[in-house]
Image 1 (tube, rainbow, N blue to C red):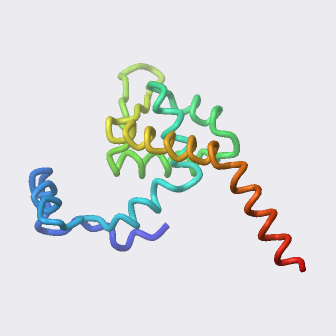
Image 2: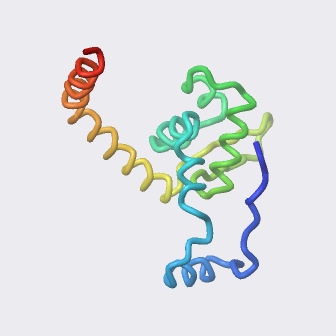
Length: 139
């Protein structure tokens, strides 16, 4: 995974700076970069699971079928870095670590539900359209 283009602009030091830039129509991080991060298979699944409430690493590992420990770790770090997950470490032996979706992630989850519901409502239309298209192409 490349670490290029991850530097924060020098004029962006606080949340107030970010809000001022946005108010002036400037996006500190290109939307495409953010969409690429959250549209990944694993990121979506982590957001869905953590939207239900706090969850431990091993529980995430068990609930997200097919994800490796390494990929789960990278995904969690990236989502935490982007402000979509909150990581809480409890001072116990062994250490207990929980991940929770932030308000920003919960808002994203609602948007994902909207897209999912849209796809369900239009599934039959898409299937019919594919059949018509394929029939025209096979002639």
